[in-house]
Amino acid sequence: MIKHIVMYKLKDRTEENAKALQQKFLSMRGKIQVLKDIRSGVDEVRSQRSFDVVLECLFESMEDMEIYRTHEVHLPIMEYVKSVVETSHSVDYTVE
Image 1 (cartoon, one colour):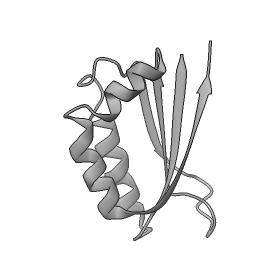
Image 2 (cartoon, helix red, strand yellow):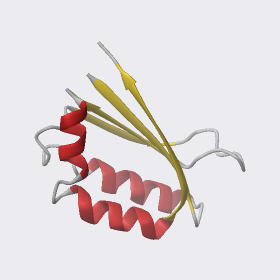
Image 3 (cartoon, one colour):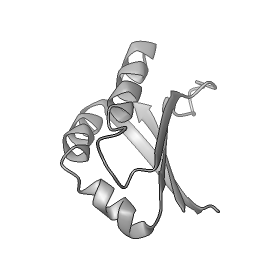
């Protein structure tokens, strides 16, 4: 299994914007078959250097992650992300 974690810092760092982005991510649940699990939450630290929203996705394989990245449900959400996010950082882990 692959755990894909992305942390986002918003251009406008309000709690409302963080929750809106979180809901966008969670709207993919059940719509993309290869997405085994999805979680998104507001970063509790909220310091100047921290990120605002954390997204965690779980996939069976790297191939499934690529299918997710090009899925018709994911693409418009990523357009929204580009419009509201200042910066992001991602990491992938292999989990049992």
